[in-house]
Image (tube, rainbow, N blue to C red; front, side, top):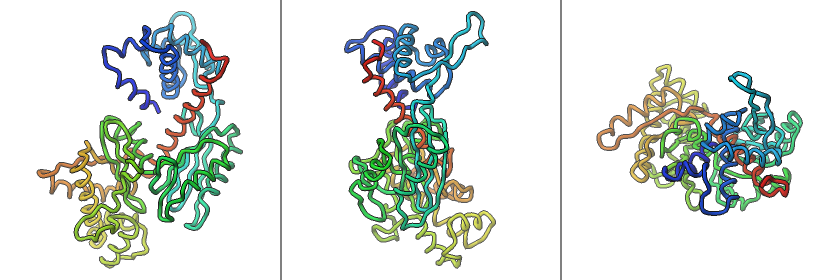
Length: 398
């Protein structure tokens, strides 16, 4: 993602930042060329076809640096000619773009009801997509493999890597712990063996937070917490421009934050909680969450009481997070973006404003946020893989 490069640039002091691209720094020149090449790759991914002059303007690199890096990228087939710019005065300038044939990455979102797959090229453009529903006892890995193979038939190419977003606690080694228990890395291992490529497993709410941080409501925030309500309630936490996963991947599991009068380890929100609330208020406990939210919007008194209680619980979770991390805002995602729910969340938060001010924003991407986050991460992972291949190539420019 371009934000990774932006973050790197922002860590360079102002008095040094301009010199990074115009005169040599202490240290190996290969490191400087590597940083410059990554800047150009990310810029082309973000902006598309650009001339050398436009690349200089976008990256701050000198003409010499741009020329050297493009020579290296062209030798590695990472960039290709994209025609000439005849709109400006003077000689026509050649445009360059990322080579769309560098390979493909799979972006996958697994929830409790379905699997969504997108194949993307290095620019993040979706080349093929597929969706399948499944039962709770189905083999998730097999569904993913079959959908990726289906997409590859529609958009032939070499699969270089895959990013899989799914509910559950994901550890640093790719092991998953969910309602089926810890898997010891078996899920990831099955995908690597079948797909024959690098596979990254990530918590789906974390991916949603990355999507918001990259180009959504969190784009201009140094810190925020995304609260996604689906089958359960989860948080994706960004602190000082970095996703916070925790030492064992458990950060953001706010579903079980204690709050009165609930017993310790009781779920705060989610499908089972909504079913219990529906039973308590005389509504159908089998009805899905969106049905109760729509009934609330239509003025049903029992549904309104249900949503009031749901909003109270979510605000208490946000307050607990604030007392520990103090994020600049909370981004609501999933079912929490329903207008009736948002209204009651903000109304409840206003009651505590003097003691604990809370700011709530609504996701730019709704229920698509985890998949969009997976697409961004998959495209970035693909570019990184291609870039490492170019650096390792014996015919790279020097």
